[in-house]
Image (cartoon, rainbow, N blue to C red):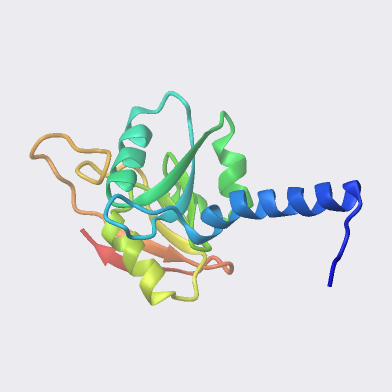
Amino acid sequence: MSQSFSRREFLTHGAAAAMAAVALPALLGARTAKGKTAIAMVVYKDPSCGCCKKWVALMQSAGFEVSARDTQDIQSIKRRYQVPAALASCHTALVGGYVVEGHVPADLIARLLKEKPRVLGIAAPGMPVGSPGMEMGAQKDAYDIMSFDAAGKTAVFARR
């Protein structure tokens, strides 16, 4: 059975196939050097913030496929994703349907994605010394990683 396509149909089907070929790896996640699927993460940060750049590099080292987006208006990002003001830090990330605010360690992000709690996200409020991206030699402050939901309820997710 022979089927013929018009030039327009051919180009339309070809364009759709090309778009699918480009989009599929992004939807599935990129492969790491070890063959694992990397989880996509978008990080909104100030372009001149050095600790944000360090945190992004640490997330990449942990296997996340990070897309860093510089913005001069980080407060509007925090409002859009309902980050409570009391939990704010210097950068806001989106990963796996969750918001990750500030210098949260990669293992806790992995735990969040594995456990899938009914929260909007987790946050390391402020800029705790010794947290990922905020290393200062042997100096290390104790800090809490807080979960938060759409109603503004917060709870301790982990302690470091």
